[in-house]
Image (tube, rainbow, N blue to C red; front, side, top):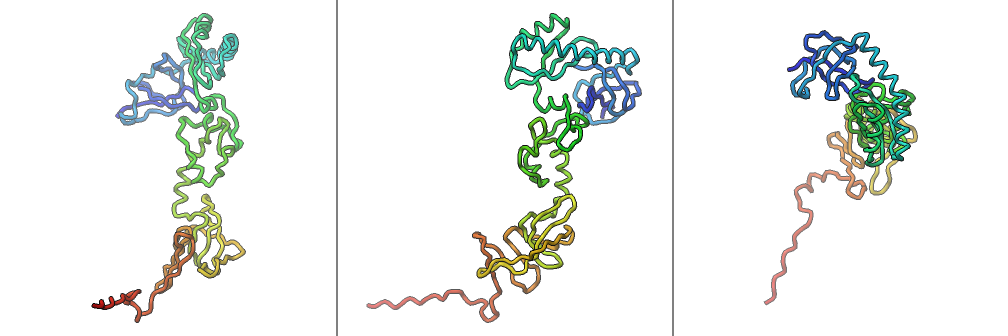
Length: 327
């Protein structure tokens, strides 16, 4: 077990573990920490926490001190320099004619390095660009290529829901998102409707998926036949969040001679009022002595009834005796 403090360096950024040592750090305190990139200025996401050793990436870097007034002023100066550094770097990019889009720039707290974030469709040869930037800034230059999801997280924006983007406002890490999650939540599979402004599947599909998966347990699918207090019904629509099922009563069951007859009006039932669920194209009664109706592979219903008592045990086909051979 290890005692750690969670520190983030950007709003809604990833949380990194640091060793607090003898310092008493509370959530929201500004701290100066040692990282692989050098000395950094960050904010404690929460206070002291005990975690398993497997969760810690060794070696665990220490928190050097709480940020003082001088540290805050220096951090503010670094933030003000970003605009001029962006303009200068963009000018150099245009000069070299590089096919890359500059997204953001970041100074390390100790001015040992400046990092430029950019996006590009492929690999970019920026060796000459690095030489020009190093001659101007007189410090180490790092150009880091990022993806479209990271670009959206850095820049921010408004989502289709009308709220600030989750990735920019509170979502710390990106999780894998699949089209199956949209199917579970009964969403349209139109890529335009389920994609964010980054062009990828919306992040909210992932962190809302667990709730939908839990609520969907025991819910039938549209087209299924289920049984209620009013009799057998056909499921027309399912509202997962309200746990309600929109149905039509089955007035006459389908046979080989006639088609299924449904009620014209719709009936809504909560999930708890369903007594038994059957597969699509298959209806089974649980009443003792009743007939059971099931669908064959062609989709037609086949009715099976019990044979009378006197016919039970008789073979379906009589075996003919062989004719005696003529000699």
